[in-house]
Length: 143
Image 1 (cartoon, rainbow, N blue to C red):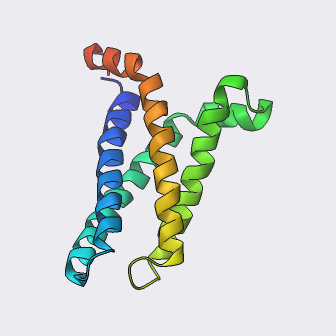
Image 2 (tube, rainbow, N blue to C red; image 1 turned 135 degrees about the horizontal axis):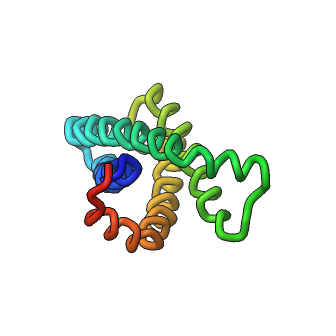
Image 3 (cartoon, one colour; image 1 turned 90 degrees about the horizontal axis):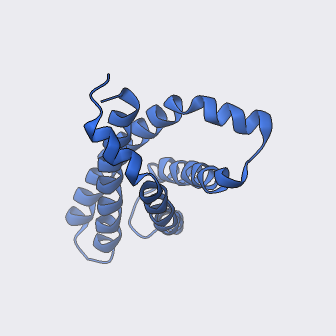
């Protein structure tokens, strides 16, 4: 399987881990147990760091596409991907800023959660659109 598809499949797995742990963290914030909240926070941070690393690898493999956007502007088919990239950047910045904030349900944490929900929906659409290519990559023996 080509390197680009290995990165994409890893990205799907860590996306799921980050999304599920984000929901778990949000729900745990409504409970009285700081220990449960803390455990979800650790799980979410670890999953999200792996997600960020996978995203960086993903963007690197698609760097020619990004350079084309910068050089030629946004094409009709590229708007969703550009929006996804910008919203993910916002999600990442709010997540990193949250590392310095104590306590569940902070205003910034709630914004991060809302942006995360938006990212989940856009990412699912991004993945579904590419499912035929992902399926084909499973049969690809080239490296």
